[in-house]
Amino acid sequence: MKKAAVKKTAAKPAAETGAKAAAKKAARKAAPAAEERDTHRPRTESEEAELRAALKERLDELVAEQARYTDSIAVAQRERLSDTAGDDQIDSGSKTVEHEHEVAVAGAISERIRQVSHALERLDEGEYGFCEKCGKPIPAARLAAFPSATLCVSCKQLEERR
Image 1 (cartoon, rainbow, N blue to C red):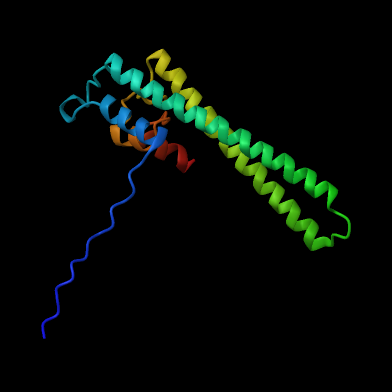
Image 2 (cartoon, rainbow, N blue to C red):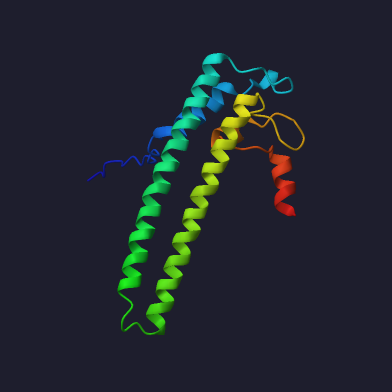
């Protein structure tokens, strides 16, 4: 008896949705073609509008996430303050670690908001897509992966080594 051949197919990653996907798409459109990499062609008005809309949408998402997170921190803090009777050192330490983690996450969200806001400012000034250190164009792949990037790959690597 013959066994039927079983085809294995790789699972396709879920399609990206939301502002991040739109920002990647806009960055790819705005990026120079291979033959134009050295000259870095200017973006068309529609490309710039699409990119601006994607960055603003991402900023709105982050601000909403920050508001939700801040509210949840406040609620958790009130619960911690009212529910400390009978806590031993381990409970107290766990609550402190949880609070520090919450504050760290809130700080990370604030930093992402700052980065996206800065990207929007750079777009308004006509500097978006160019490295802040050396002035060279930031590769399209980098902007597609990280739309608020301000440094080219080389300058970012140098910065991380320090």
